[in-house]
Image 1: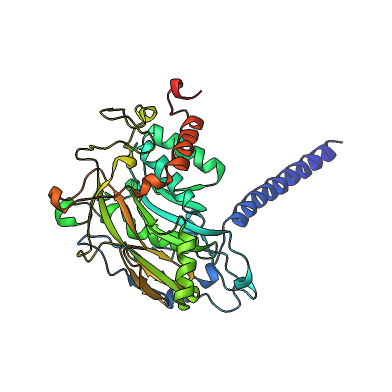
Image 2: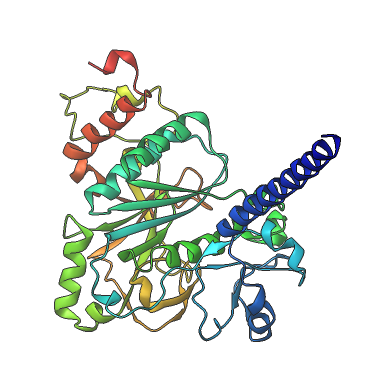
Length: 398
């Protein structure tokens, strides 16, 4: 009987050991199923990699770089990662990015999810909720289906507003915590602003957005939140592009459309009434008082403009992303498409910025109230989204 008890204890420990071993194997096998393991191909892939620096770095130490590698034959890769050392033990801790836009038979015939997507780079340290609400609603009126915003940081009011837009699907917020890894510059040039990288990595985010929506959107608009690509003879961007396609057949096949920028400075001394709120002679009614408590500025007050037609870096673009290999901020650096400059009278960029690099004399300034043409729809839409996000004062919510 004593020997039987000893034998039973041995079987118990043997069974317990096998159970622990199986539990460990199952645990780690599940972990490795989640993370791709292209260990066999690492040496072959890196051997054929090509590293290509972006031509624009504005004097900074860090520069946007394209690392391109050939996927080995008979390899159905789904994710990719960049290793600094050939240490297989550290592979499971790497960040793996999905491989998008893979060529497949019949894929080109699939209908795009969006017609027009706006890529907004580098949101940081702002709380200008009113400007964002106005601009996003203006995009929507012009035919934009999706807005992508690369978010480093923003104030609480703006964050709440953008969460409302994200929940309805109009805005995609892409986390961009570049400030956790380096000291990003607040400006364009290292000589003037310092830091590690140009303007919070703006060139990197624009190119990332281009490839993110390459197979999801027919057109991609590359500009900033304080800019609106405005058609001046039509009420939607699609109508403008359709017109170009009739006049220029190659636009349908491949297009990079360039729009010239014009500065729109805030009112210097408005001596006329806002047409949506007409007043009798001598009336000084406040423009849209319901927005008084919303943080940010009112783009509808930016009616004085001066052009930048003589400046070389005054362009922003609408592109067919599948025809673009690489872009900068104001021009395409590598493309398979033909590029066209939109005539100024057909459309240009409305640039509503609080701070502008210089102020023109009044004699060189023009009045342009094109934004007011959309006021009947724009103002109620802005009020609705401000109400949904809790930013409209209680006295104006009835």
